[in-house]
Length: 132
Image (cartoon, rainbow, N blue to C red; front, side):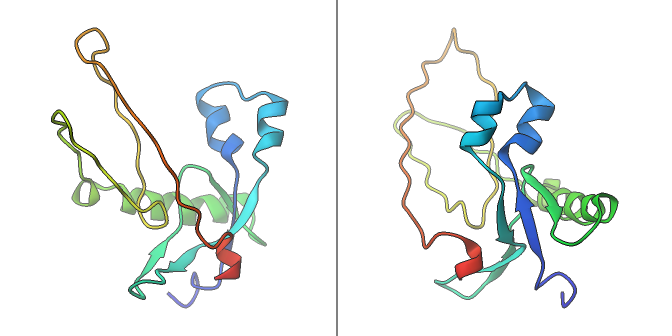
């Protein structure tokens, strides 16, 4: 814990997206890499969590291999079967989550059978984790 608590990580949208599909230069430029704390403290309850995801590119000051070993290990642990919740949707449901401490992803569905109606809203936080 003492080793990783002070670490800062570069997060880059284009890092992961480029592995899935092409990312144009203009799109990548619109979402430049940012530095974020690896360990965040929830301002409401004091609990600590790792701020990782597929966009976490590298630890500031570490080489790529060492960075990937740590980040991939943390992400693998966070996405293990014992940490996954899969929502079984029912009509009229609403799901709300806190992006500061939860990884999420969509899953495929039969678009011919189901109509997807989605609205998204975002609540602005305090900004960079470096300011926390």
